[in-house]
Length: 468
Image (cartoon, rainbow, N blue to C red; front, side):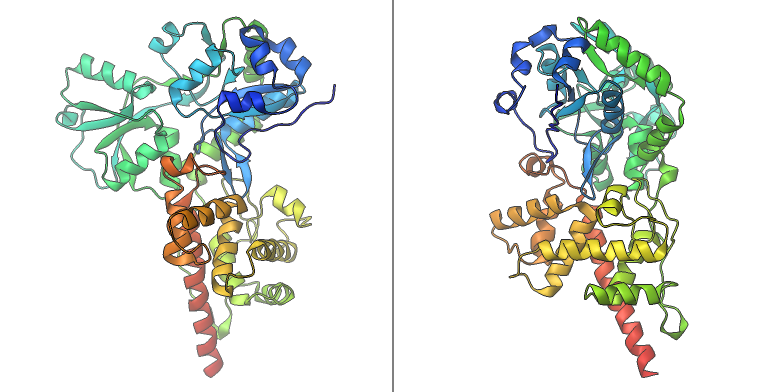
């Protein structure tokens, strides 16, 4: 049987069950098979339907690539069983369990924490093999100094979803410790990283989250920190229906083999280990003699080929790798221009750590993004759009320009127009309505701003050197 590849949410847009059923080839199984489907039937049809979340831990788009710990683990499991993957992202966290119970999907893989209450209250659903070590922490802003003990939580407000394990943990803490803090319930649509962002901005007082989610947010620049750690360590688990013993057995065997292995450890560190931070914090000043980087000659050669100012490429290269030819980011981007493996293959780069090959590929890829921009956009704004697309993917640029147009702003101008629309794409209201979903807006906006301003500084330094 020819396998059918359909990754729903390649565009990261949420489809209703009615829309899912309307899609071609084989999706009649979603209705016809209902609750009775197990692994043998899944293998017969050739694909597995997976419920997850669009967030930095589970499933997201970065540099035009679909990524996420759960996304990659699901694909490893599917590959072992000769399956393709259909990804489903319901609007609410609670909908995942409902959709699984109703037979709309086969498994939940969404960093769902296993807790005693959840295990006891799952009607017709079961957890599979445990994975990950989860330490839940009370989190405040980076300048928080008043909380030293749990008693210091009295009078404070902690914001969480009522469907989260954090709500369960905080309720138990409050009862056991006879503490007088307030648990504030937020929308079930809000992802943990969105709640953490609101804490950083001062919109929420405190929250509770897994250490891994905290580390992700800190790595992305959020000004937050842990103030207290809850005592009990927990774990994550995928979920299946109770009448799927074959699937549960296969998932259990998969995790027993994967846990502790080099691939699993590498993936877990990539998404949850703060020490993998590749933020470029140091400043760079042009060197004496007009030199900008150790690779100026190569940059000039390839920039001329594709008609870019060479100082612009140097500025981008510094933003990407700090001129480190062996740089590898948390997401797997490699070399001076931080090419993702798929991108490197696309542009014909055979050795991403070879400066000449990497710079050529990076400049060529930037030119491809440049050529995608309509002709009516002027050169400066086209460069901004091309950089945004290089960093975040062309899909998010399409969404941002469309949103700018809908807001009555100019879709052909970056500053105060398209960049404003990008900022909104990180908010749930706009992300849910965008074709390519949630966007790492601050990273993309900052990327463009820093490269363009550093480019000016580099060119100024070159002009001063020329006049000497």
